[in-house]
Image (cartoon, rainbow, N blue to C red):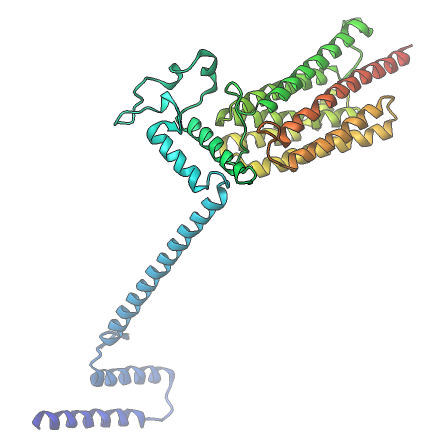
Length: 419
């Protein structure tokens, strides 16, 4: 009872103090208002138990700040957990979407796992897949365990497991009436003497031979059949440009054959870089020939921006990221640009061999469609890319025939002007 009476007295006393403070309504100056607010805060502090010092509130306000900070911290942790979860889910989804249909097959994955453990796929076993308990091959280096003519192909345990599991899985799919699917981004090809894509390798080799034959016949025409200047140089002013073109073409087709023989990171980058260099130089050559740029300084000024772009693109592919989509766009733009330049020039210049040029332009445009329209290889050998290599063989013959005709045409014109 005594405690209750004391509490009621204190509460009535505090309420009277608040009433007195609220009854002050006389107008005050700005300084007086600030002073009154501070006094009011002190009075309220005596009621609530909140200490006031130099205009700062402590006590309950600090506890409320602590609660708000803990709430913010907890909410921040929840947000971080949310973003981490979202990141993991998206990463998983991107990995699934990035994988090809073949290597995402559970049966194929199980075959790979079993092969890497036992070194066998069915009844086929690979000596370089035999490992000891510490993971070291028990039979020495794998390249010492195969015939000499197969040592160059750089097949390892993982590659052999993938290939043979792919072959068995495709046989099962074919028995069920299902079509072939891609494995690790590539169609299932059949090896021939260790060659990964035999049709593309064969067509690349033929293209190399066609360019060599065309360049050799062009060289023979310039220096042994057509008249020469007194300094034993050819009258044809674009001969040196075509010599460089021939070397870049043979280099590109050589590395194409190597790359399709064995697809590894090194051969892939060299093949792509060689193809980009050839396309970039072909565009420069088209500009210089069609606009009849003869002065060396003008040639350098015209070629410098394209050379800088092609060099930057090659460095990007090799040193930063091998972006297949971006590389396809760059090569497509350079290829279409030079075809259009040659086609328009053939019509405007009324060149006597313009029909050969139009044949190459039209045929090259159709051949480029094979790079866009992709389909699985017939009988495991012939796909769209291999057909593109095959289509360029006759076009290469016609192309070098036009180059030789152009050399004869330009030489005869220059000789007529001299006379």
